[in-house]
Amino acid sequence: MNVLVERFRRFFDASKFDMRSRDARALQCTTFSYTYCRIILGTARRPIDYEILDANDAFASLLGLKAKDVVGHRASDFFLDIAVTERRWLEVYARVSETGKAEEYEAHSPSFDRWFRLSVSSPEKGLFVIISSDISKEVEFRREKDQYLQVLETIHKPLYVCDARSIIMSANPAFCELIGYAAEELRGKPAHFLSADRSAYLNYGFPEHYFDSLARRFSSIPTEKKDQQGDFLLRKKNGSLCWVMLSAYPLLDEMGTVRQIVCFPEDVTEIRKRENDSLTRLYETLANLAELRDDDTGNHMKRIGYFAALLARELGMDEKFCKDIALFAPLHDIGKVGIPDAILRKTSELTVEEYDTMKKHTTLGYEIVKGTQELSMAAEIILHHHERFDGAGYPTGLMGYAIPVSAQLTSLVDIYDALRSERPYKEAWAHEVVVKYIAEQQNQAFCPEIVETFLLIERKFAEIYEDFRE
Ligand SMILES: [Fe+2]
Ligand SMILES: [Fe+2]
Image 1: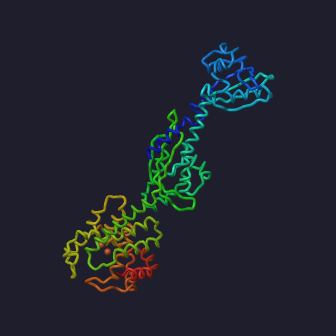
Image 2: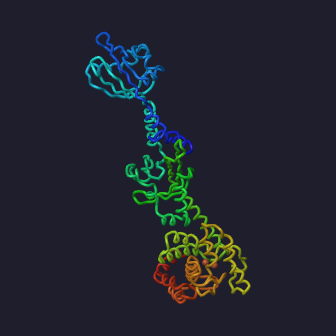
Image 3: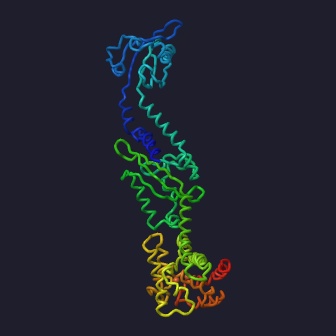
């Protein structure tokens, strides 16, 4: 990537492409050369030379001379083999002197090895006036710009270029293909019009302030003049999202002002999905680990995830919350890895001391996952899934709406599933019996709104339970 950027920095040296900068100033300073000449014809009236009747210093200085040194001389006194090397030029001079019709053209002079823009006119047959300016720098400028455009077109990596206000100036075919817009549709638009909105970032699992800090960092490029890199969610023309790792490089002019920002958006949708999948598998492994310690729970963990997400969605929680709870609710009993088998697998009733030890699976589990942003929901579920709405739960005795929603949901679905299942110390309860029990627990174990929502979709719980019985 760095090689590419360096190549760009070279081509993109803003001073070469900005008409307000160095080359433009050089062009403005160019003085016009003037020569007044008589054409000299050879056999068959072919032009072979010309005599300089008058000239200005600007012309003479091209030869390292003063005007007085060239006036009265023939061109062939200064240019070797002029009839051959400057044949094309001589033909124009002869034509204009003959027809009296002025001509303008741009050409490379082999004698000076420079490019000139010429205007040739004839005041009288046989005589001609040349007004010319040196456009070598302008030609070089155009050639480099063409080269740059060619590079832009042929680079297979998606890329687009913005000005300092983040207005898109150009986009290459690879980027157009990625995003679904034609280059003309992008040109002149602010780059942020391609970004998905804040809620999409949240749904994809980016933390709360990610979107704002990302926007802040990238909008600071013109002032900070530093490269920036970050994950963006782009909204394609067809509405779908594309996850890119965007590297933006400011290109400075000779005054140190940011003129352009060249942006390489690398499509990482598949990579990030794979990373997410392996993270999900890791969480599942952790949940299975906890399940292994607990006897006879079969598909308990899997069902807990489905139930919790179902209930969360019905409650109107956002997509990110629903995805997370599906992932993290199954981890609620992970702390059981720290509870001795003698207590965990005991089939008779626990003593008070044993029950106190058992309760510690909440705080033990919390200790395992606390402190990381990605696992913050897991931490609150693990710590609080045995709290009760009336405050009689453990370990903190939180009550009512102070209990995190994720933990309240997990608590309800955990109890639904535990009651439906057969355990060494109890029979399996029928779905209807469990629904009745949960309905009775409004304001006691559970939040009334959550219970009401559960009652709206309780049939789906029965279906999921049957589908994932073992
Ligand atoms: Fe538990
Ligand atoms: Fe459980």
